[in-house]
View (tube, protein in one colour):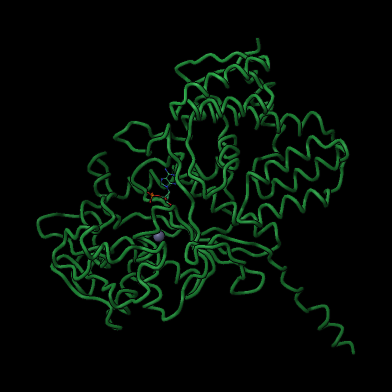
Length: 488
Ligand code: AMP
Ligand code: ZN
């Protein structure tokens, strides 16, 4: 009897249920998420190639990864999360040709590869911290520190007959994997006919890719290792298969990356992992869309690379940038403009101000109805725009007491990560009047719409919107820093 009671108390509590729908790139549909192990989620996110500063586009990919993690923690699950650091093997053209980005960065900046990696990894980590990305328990493995694991992985593929040598490396034979290209429905026939130009004539198929590259005899690399096939370095894709297997096992739940990873990198990862491990290694593939700046791709050559530090230089908090990201769904391509960010900043400021100044200090309880609307929105493929709208509806709702609003907002912030628990310090640090912080959201929306119309060169619509804004009591002045609003 006593023993039974003891056993009863020792019994593990049942795993929390998960109610989440995710858009799975593999099935091209929203699917119910079922973890491999009840109560536990394992996730791998393709990390940055650390040869340059983290820009606000990268930030989108990792705020997205953070939202998935926070959502699961909010639902009471345990999360194992890996974000790798690519510090070797990523070549400039993604197609096994060109220069290694790290070696090239080292040459460009007259530094060692090690110094480059350290500089930009630290910068990446600093960005995550400023964006309030929860790195608690997250592992950040580096490719260069897992060479043996990658060699062992390639060895397994070789033993199973999936590889062949060429004069410049060991390649994966994609024709041996019938499911190749399923992710994103790649047009293999089109590629065979020459769309993905095979620069390397020794490749048997245009989609074949390097697992191991040989160091060129005429070139001294800073990063190279001995291997069963000769001195060289791993291809870009193998690190993700080797490290996800090491840290998460043969099978894990979720793999994410930006949409640019779908056609090549992730199809290659699937081929390597499924063939070497003999299982379907990943159940859910999720991809975040890109951020463009003034309608253009972010690139050094266009001179439009914006970093978080540029955001801070305009007295805009990185968390306001996070807030702006959350106002769009992760699968929607977004266009960054300073006007849009400034509008979001004002909204963010209003939120912090309302939280500190309007809601009092009394302890309240979480409003169950709002909590349900909020968590249902996030559980529907992470619908952050709807979650943010719910937050504002709650603030406006006179039927909910101030203490309960406060408690509910703090609860929401476990997922949103907008730093509400430190709102007081934020306001103190931003005592300087934030320009036009009393602009009503409707007017801000009109301004955003006008901005969109102007970008689309629909000047008639833009003028109509200007008139509407004027009727609401605000004047627009177009400055080199973007459109500003002033009370008439
Ligand atoms: P990379 O350092 O280029 O390997 O990129 C790291 C991650 O950032 C990948 O998941 C990319 O898809 C993502 N990424 C890079 N540029 C952008 C962008 N402009 N917008 C959104 N995500 C991006
Ligand atoms: Zn990867």
